[in-house]
Amino acid sequence: MKTSAYFLLLLLTSCSFGEDGQPPRYTVIENVHVIDVLRGQVLPDRTVVLEDSIIRYIGDQATSVPFAPATVIDGTGQFLLPGLWDMHFHLCWESGNDSLLLLPLLAHGITGVRDMGGDLAIQAQLKAIGKADPTQGPDIFGPGPILDGNPPVFYDFSMPLDARTPIPHLLDSLVANGADFFKTYSLLREPELVQIAQYGQAHQLAFAGHLSEYVAPERSLELGQKSVEHLNRLDEIWTNDPARIDWLADLMVEKESWLCPTLVVYYLKAHLADSTISMPQYDALVHPILRQEWETTRSKRLARPGQQDTAALQRVLNRQLALVGHLHQRGVKILAGSDFAGMPFVYPGIGLYQELDLLHQAGLTNAEVLAAATIHPATYLAIQDHYGSVTVGKIADLILLAKNPLEDIENIRTLTTVFRKGKRVGIPQGYVP
Figure 1 (cartoon, one colour):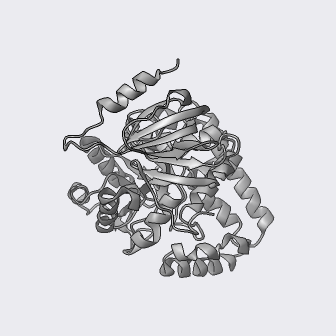
Figure 2 (cartoon, rainbow, N blue to C red):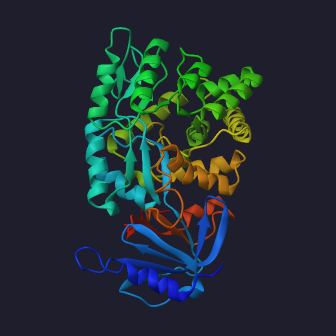
Figure 3 (cartoon, rainbow, N blue to C red):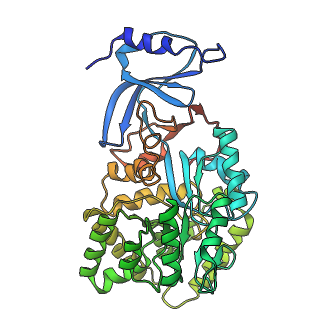
């Protein structure tokens, strides 16, 4: 049903003055195709009105009328969709990453990030940048340091836990310093994981992370692990006991546990000997320390037996793609994440684009891939009432594409414009491929 021009004019003029008596800032995007990620369809030729940080109106192009001062954008032929989320990223591991990473993330349409292990002081600094000026950084959710066994896999980013650790006191400290959830890792023992889960349930804080080598996956899911990161133990079970994978998939669905497979990690492992995975044009976006670590890691891995057998490595990748497709078909909900700074040669922004391509190769439709980077992250983070779709009343974190991503997910690379809380983001030249 068409909305009358009179109603649109009434809507705009009825809220045309704020408490200070000044007209609010409007942005009108005319004649744009809206991607409805909730239904996986295109709403053609719409007018979208942003009032400050909020999507105020979406309607037929024919209803557009002149109104109070506004910025008008011609969206003819373009596609409007919600900003993307990278749900597995390591942003808070080194000070100075604000100048390297925040704008490149926005420039690739990534308006939200789930950090998966780092320094809480750095996390607070980076969050503050985006809050002070949304055009300078994405929304960030993060856990602080990784919670692992003793000894941990990584000393630099971890808190090692064992029977002697006063875990509730430690978790109190993390929460007091801004942890949004807890990241659990590969060497945690069951007694420590149980304490983390019990604390989380009492304080309404989730735990997410690796499936521990010392805890049965079924037990982790029963304890409430909200998301499983990567495919490590799942791939082992898929190979050796396919029937058990079906049981685990059904349990993930029952317990509302999500999967963030980070397929780009396995793609890069399979192609580590391929020089084309290095993108020198984007080296400026990577901290020099990290860049050196990438080269060192590649040299060490390629020296191992079998690491240059590209055919065998490709077969492993194909198996992992099939695993994600199988879990998805059984109803496991997927989150898109790149694991930047966790895997060599994952570039900020580009890594998420690669992940979306791989999710499509795994069998997700283009609409399902978009959901994994938009409405699924918002739902996972319990902010779906405000983020994740182009819907009236939601936050105007939006991107414009020149081509339709529902036809080809590669069209996510045709980004032309980014809005962060209704403000147009200035994209420095050379940030987007």
